[in-house]
Length: 197
Image (cartoon, rainbow, N blue to C red; front, side, top):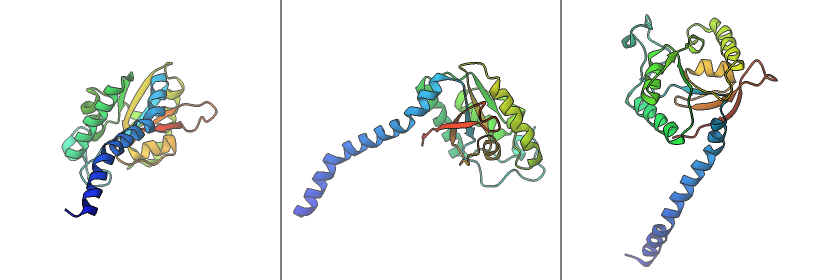
């Protein structure tokens, strides 16, 4: 081995552990505010369903009572749901309600991650029925204003719903922590994103 290569290898062997440690610490620091706010409660935690099979919306003629007719989670999406569940379990944060769109990709994600779900119509997909968006968003805001003190709700839902309620665009699997603010009654206030990947 040439001296230059030896020195480079030696330097890398000493630097790598510290670099890995600093990256881990950085990731923890990124989420510190998320977990601090989550521990306080009074949050609606939006979760856009994780990865699905390719497609936009659902196949023509899909039925809510038949998961086989819908666009569903793929293997990566199911793995991501397990990862999200583990992240929240490790955090120790109390989750009072696991609310889900009736779409199977959302209910399946909630069941994998948290072992339960309640279907909540206000967060059903509005992608193919956008005229329902404003009314469903108002229902979410009304519920948020009346949320029992200290509670955390997980909302397993879709990009369009999250965009209407928060003004934020999301990728599949993204998690946003929001609160109702009476000074901003038409949209939830986004306080933090969870960097879980």
